[in-house]
Length: 80
Image 1 (tube, rainbow, N blue to C red):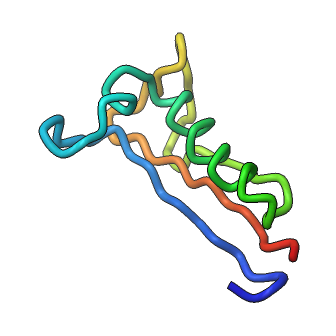
Image 2 (cartoon, helix red, strand yellow):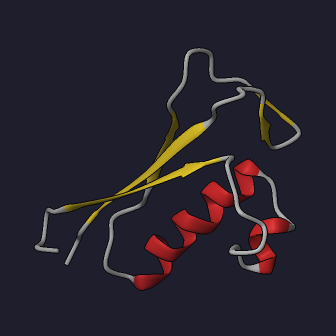
């Protein structure tokens, strides 16, 4: 990506357990958002990432989205 470019990563609560890495199966929806944001953060090449839940009524309880069809988008802009 060029400086000023944006990377977006979409997450949902749908998963194929046989295809997912172990840490993904042991963490909740909110921890998934932090994990993806951490990848952007620790590269040192992006401005601080942001995240938003895309859905009719964003609602969280104990780190889990209460929406049946949950989708979050983590966004980061290239800094360097």
